[in-house]
Image 1 (spheres, rainbow over the protein chains, first blue to last red):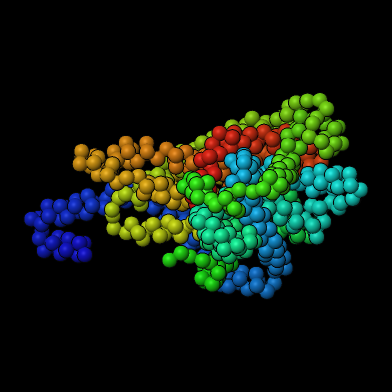
Image 2: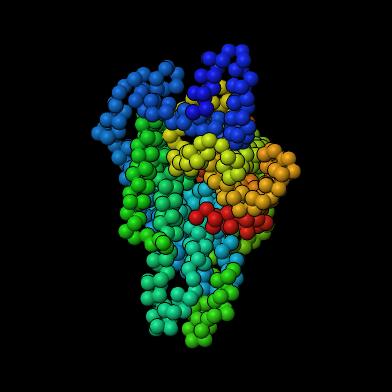
Length: 318
Length: 292
């Protein structure tokens, strides 16, 4: 609105109006300028590093691009090939979904169980909580992936332990049936951060509810089922969404454990690992961009689906 | 806090939910201790393996080395063409610059969102929250092309400069939440005294926000220290490698030959994270709890 008036004054007023226009700009500046000055670094980052690249990546997904020659428009060819003629894409999807479906429920169940144990006024709560949280802090590092690679190797620590019970374990990381499980175990090992969020959620449940229930003779199990679980659903929902999105994006452990190949026989070929191989191994930047947009689509669909179904099972206070 | 006191004060004598029979509490502790041991055993085993004589590493599942020997550390440190001293220094430079960038840029943006009035504030705030949802893979390739054309590949700039542009929206969000909890009367009183937004930001908001700034700083440091993907893409010259890339190269070059050296360097790479965990776990745990 203000700019329309400004330009009208500027056109009609000539020299006389100039101070007025300047005053207008000055007052606009005084009102909104400080906010935008503080926001400036973020705004530059948003346009230069997020919005601009996102648009560019969408364009590149319809091209063939190897970094050397300029991108060549190929229409929907990348997407068509992904959908119909790319066995590695199919393998990556399968591995990634398997990983999500296995790791998230195990991790959350374990986190909830331990949180329930810790919530009941256990002595040494801060000690246990800190200890259980430690793997979440270390888990993403190369060092832990290296350790995992040794733990589950044919002559690794796990098999040495099993040997003491007379069991001869396979080489877990180099067997296509078991390799994904080593990554699932690594993910469950990092149950600490959802556990802390569960603990914070359990604190919010008013104690008088349990008291009323136990006066009515409700068993501990019934109390859990009828009070704790329903009141905790918002936290479960939050943890499930966050952990699922994280699982879709997992990269480092699969990269280190498989030596960057996603093997054996693509059994640890996480989606992000495949995307990395296409982009920075084969320099198929256009194809990799299409893969990236499909990942966005999958995560977006999953998130939308969770929020739509959440009203049927997530309990919100009014 | 209030719940705990409510529990102890109002709990009926019959079956208080907060108290257990001695047998039950022993069982709970047994379960928790078993879980603790299972969780830290691999870590302790790695540390112990790093100080064992080379031939003993795989001979034993026990945690106690027969003799302590730091030869693995020396071998590991000089195990590649470039020493781990260089990798550690590189990691430190990248991590410290990231911490500075995140704290400065995110607190500026958070102050604007939490306190200043300007046209479009809610719109930009929603956009900022939205950027947290987008997987970075979407911007990865064009960003790479951009930094490649700027000649920034094999420098730390692609890892650090985005942080000075507040690219970690999570920290902005964390700080906005904290800033909103600071009483407005303080800024209003300062404004009466003729303070502009810069002085209020600098003299009031920042000093009162040390806990959240520290949380953001520590998480920035740990995540950057542990980051593998960014350095993997942007750093190809071994002189610029971070410690994570150094470790990965070590795995590839000596996959079965020098486990002692590998475990020694792995242990070393976890030391800074462990240090922050030891001294700031309260801040970290509260930081995680408030994200929900």
